[in-house]
Length: 125
Image 1: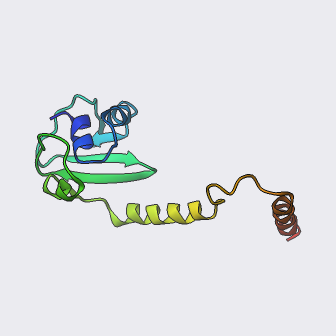
Image 2 (image 1 turned 90 degrees about the vertical axis):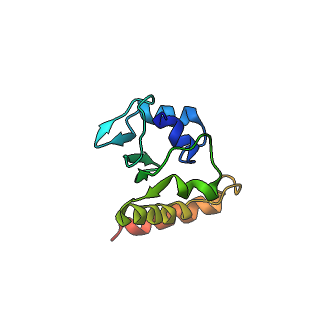
């Protein structure tokens, strides 16, 4: 099975075109080598996928015939991502929570003044 189709089938990418694009940009590797989307995947291959600033490592157990449900993904791969990489994911979620809530719109004059007051106070230190 092609690597881009495998990554789509096991739900690492939402579409095959996104998986193809990741392969073309060098974000998918086996043994440290960039892959073309047409590279065949075999059981026991270890694939490294860079997605959302995290390097995931997966071991191929089997190749599915078509896209599988989320509950069945475990039959076809084992996630061997190091714990340090998963900790980075937690840190990224903390930084995103400090941004404005979606739908709150642009900052008001009061918000802007508060921000400027905060920035001016830190410059004096």
